[in-house]
Length: 535
Image (cartoon, rainbow, N blue to C red):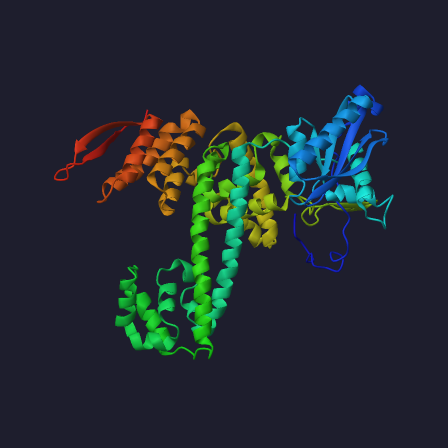
């Protein structure tokens, strides 16, 4: 299906590629027919950082107001809008649109100004304006020529009609992108720290395979205490054990023995080890700060996810809070998609096709000019499904035996996963599929997520209550049963019962519990006990 054969980094891919215009989604001809072309106005706006250039024409291209500059200030924008309104009255313009070229984020003040004034404001992609610039002015790129190209793109329907996003979905979109940016920066820090650590403690990172260097509580703490292997050799097992106990770090004696055994035969450190140690420790401070920021972003993502129907995807095995939040943030309101194929079309989860005469290659690489952020989210979800979902893991194993490309496998699984997820979110349903051998529970996943992230109890209770509002009522008994099991496990433990009280409050809201309060012997504090019965 996708990513077969040659690598994309070929000589052809290095050449300039044609602009992708897509299908004209902003067709205005029916509106023009109603009022007449000479009574339909188009404002073309070419945006820059501090100011924009605009002109006002009718549908035939007659210039009603010549190109002018407008500063990105409130007074100047209001003055420009008033001037356009006056010109519309003078020339009998009964209907009009504003076509604003997308320029990073520079176009946003202009777009907001027109929309707040009640205009039908549409965005013109630079691909479209560049395409319509070439026939008339292939060698001259000026603001006036750009305005003409923006006008021609708008006349032919190549301006984007942006659907309105709810504030919750918009916030989620920026939160998941901010988290992804932090994750990528932390990954770069991981590589830099490993490189410097290898020069200071050769072979030390290999003691903790995979992500053990970052997930093990011992690895970084011992490395920060010992700049070289010689320090560990002198400390021995008693010294390393004392370090970890001083740091209140949980550890296993065999891990300490493995570290000391490595130090006994470690290669000499780099002569610049003292300097390199200071550098990687500063990088590690940055890594830890970014890890805390990622945890904070993930807690925020969960808080907004529970306000959307995408929280129902947690019942899908292999999808957790972060994946569901990324889907909600990049896809937006599910009402913007007519069916699952609309999702795969926007994400480009289908092969490109080349056909000419009798030649027909319908199984080319993935369609390239699509929403790459949405595609990346779906491919990450597919990777999680292969790892955590028995149904898709079996499908992936079968394709692997048939020597299907690994990238093709992920694309196929992502394409298939869009169907049940679309029906779950659009139909407000929980996971119901032949592979439901390991079906997940929404509230239980949320509970575990917040426990892992050390979320304050107030937010846990708030998020669980919000999630209940999204659940179909017929699912309450099953969701309550999963929480009851978690509560019973919690009751067997000693210590604070904050999470137990949260679970009780949630169960009471589900209508699946009867609660009574008994005093705890010798403490004077009440203990909440549960007599749970699902309806």
